Image 1 (cartoon, rainbow, N blue to C red):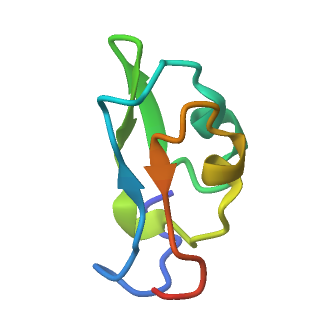
Image 2 (image 1 turned 90 degrees about the vertical axis):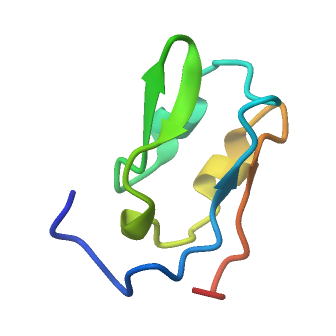
Length: 72
């Protein structure tokens, strides 16, 4: 989704890979494909596509993801 952008380099999205349990829910709920799975862990692959909707945070069972909706 490289063509969907709001503002580059302002997203507050943070992924704590030590807390990630590899459930892949973030990849399923993210409307802009910000995440991908690699070696049973989530990776942020397109931070600037994040619209800070919070779907990933709400669905992450281990609390590995944080975002401040509306900040960026």
